[in-house]
Length: 159
Image 1 (cartoon, rainbow, N blue to C red):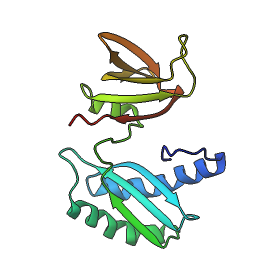
Image 2: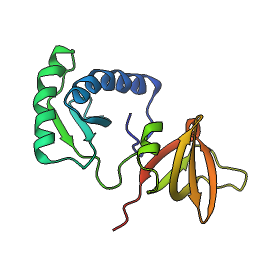
Image 3: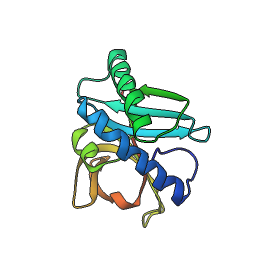
């Protein structure tokens, strides 16, 4: 269910959700958070993005890769190549708990539809999520954006 620059069909979306449902328990069982899963080349390449407080190391990626290499064939997932990595500094935000975890950090949010002023893109400081909305502080003013209308969101690295 990655936020790619392309649209996915309902069948592809359902397929990715089913794939995530098979991967999530294995990743969580090792103490990591499943951030995202991407599939390309007709499902032959699987990219799994994991995270944990304090960040991800190469050893973390190797441990998850070893586990998924055993679990996925048992779950009936056919693939040629598996890549496990950190989501990076511009980590995608997908779940309400992501918006809570990163309170106080700068994020970019893109909405599916424009607000009354015609704006779809918002860049500001996360202030939390509750009741199906995320609060973002923009230039001293806090706005509430509906999570169901969110097209994509990611952290903005401050280097």
